[in-house]
Amino acid sequence: MKLWSMSRDMILDKAKQYVSTDRAKTHGDAERNFDQIAELWSARLGFIISSHQVAIMMIDLKTVRAWNNPSHADNWIDIAGYAACGGEMTIEAEIDPL
Image (tube, rainbow, N blue to C red):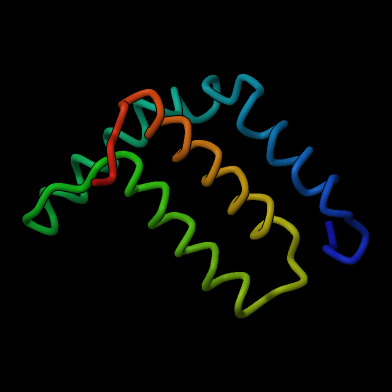
């Protein structure tokens, strides 16, 4: 889908659909996936990465893709979805940034 055919509400609605529907059948549980990615990246990097930091880094990935292809709606939708997942994981973990 091309971005110029989508309003901000449509982008957010699509992101909500992606993060709220049962995608676990295809990709597994989102929280478990983020935890597993955090464990893997922590091992590779040699320092601890949290699941909410995984969400931030996935946003970074999509940011670069959006920078290079700003009219591709999937990048913007995924950024919104990763932000929602990261925010929820932070709230559930009761992470205090200070």
